[in-house]
Figure 1: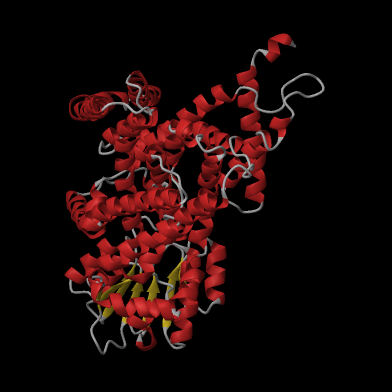
Figure 2: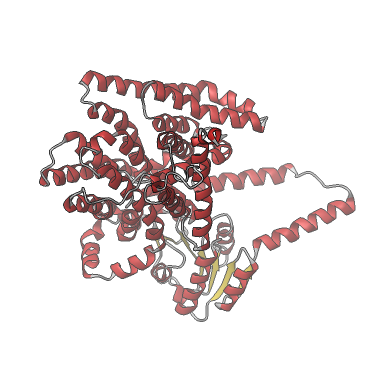
Length: 589
């Protein structure tokens, strides 16, 4: 028994993973985000739950007994989370949203800092380190949470997805610069120390560039021949910068992020991300559970005005700043509202900042724990904000204030006007909802016989169609306002080429409502989706996967009968290469 009790870290780790598994299963049954399960698991085994019972009757620890060791693993969790974010990041996407992401992202952080500092001063709290730490903790939004939701909802290439991603990347860069410099501020280091810290950061970035330029291409090319070697090289790339950062007394998450960025433009970046996904998920689970463990609900030591200031900053002031930056940058009220709701949370970087600045935050008893509670709460609210966007937008769009804003800012909506080109008098035409890999060839074919109008939520694709002279409009396929713009009530035929079943189903219902006589073709992924589409009065449903399986069967049977299969001709390969080049231009790949 004594030997077992010495393995406290093993017990703690086992308890974290077991509780995470149980609560993950429970939230999945309730169709809730995984993140909720992990944080609830942490609350359950932390001070608010089993942590209060440090020993069971048998003498074996029940709650977390060695939090410092767990926090170290949690720090690795943040490091691998940000390594993954770095590998997936594409800084060229900042350019796709112009100056808005760069200037707007910087302005948002500065305004949030100023508002928090002013609020603290109004409460009689005069502390520059506290104002800087608390302001930056609340200013940054979560790249991990937002990008995951955008990817899961197939919205990463939408206008609001690109804009939010641009804001987040700018914030990430500012966080990387802020963390080491704040470390100097918090210990009241002289300017010389701050310069040394900055130079160390520059040295890490320069090393990452040298590795990317001269080492990684050949190293990963060799490693790609073996799955095991590739995994070890990918893992070592992360740990190299983690160890260097620790040696420099730098936040290890910053080093991991820089390492990820250095791999993001390699042709092997997707494979790197896939290889380290299991390690990332393991450590990130520990991170989120540990976040829950550290949460306590003892708010009696905090003043209610300070609590209100923190909550208002995250859930009201920061979204308002994002909303007006996006609105006055010409993105329209819908995209602006998406940005406001989608970025109303606190970042995983903020967790690192809170740990780094814990001595500063704890100058006000209870503030550190409350900040962690706000980090967790804001992350939990985000999936629900995305899910409820449509109903929130519908309830706000007709309000007097929103109508007033639209009138005031209509002259700024140049970005949306660039994504809309519909001739007047369009009738007896075809509407193509979704002009990606499936829809665009249909557009090209039908153009020879009738007028065609395109609807898609990818701005790059709409730009391409407009450049080609195809009447097009940016927007969601199941948005009644968008369908009215393409004169759906006068259209002859509609082809729904989008792969998302719920959106396709809503589109069929709206089209049938606007134009009972329109002929509707739709695609479906599953047979049950086809049943629903036919029930909604679609005229014909195409199942590409079903057609592909029949084609495979036919080709395979012919090859088996002849015992021979001809190689593709040179003409076929040339035509394929031509189409690939056109696809690359169209989709902005």
